[in-house]
Image (tube, rainbow, N blue to C red):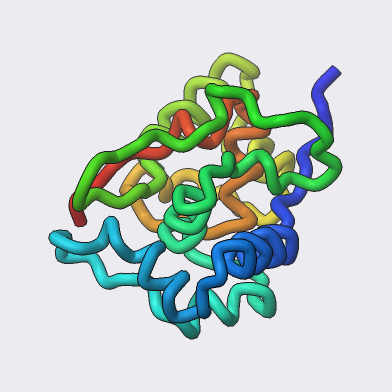
Length: 174
C-alpha cells in the first residue's frame, strides 16, 4: 500500500530558521549574508532579505531559496514534511556542492524518473498529475525542459517516486 503524500511545512521551516538565527545571535541581515556566502563567485542573484523574511506568508517559495536555507541549516527537505517523527536518513541530506556553487533541483532528472515510473505503472501523464496535488499534466511534462520549481509543491514528486528529494538536487555555479 502506498503511503499518503505529506505536505512540506513552510511555516515550520521559517520557525526553525528563526530559532537557528536566534541561537546564533544573528540579525536577519546577518543570517541572509551567511546563507548567501555560496553565491559569491557565481553569476546567480543572491537571496534578498525581504524574500527570507516574507517566506512565512508565502504559499510558494522558489526551490533555490529553500535549498540554500536548508543547506545553511544542515537539514534535509524531508525533515519539514508534515507528520515526520523520525530523524533524517543520510540519503535525505543535501549534497555538499563545494565553494561558489549553489543547490538547484534537476527538473530534467525529475521528469525522467517520473516518466520511467509512469511507464512502469502503465499510467498516462494525466493520471500521474491526478496523484500529485498541485500539478497539472503540462506542469509535469514541462519538467523535461528544466524550469524552476517551488516549495512546497516540489516535495510531492520525490515522495510519489519513493526517493529522497536530495537525489534530484545538483550543485550549480549559476
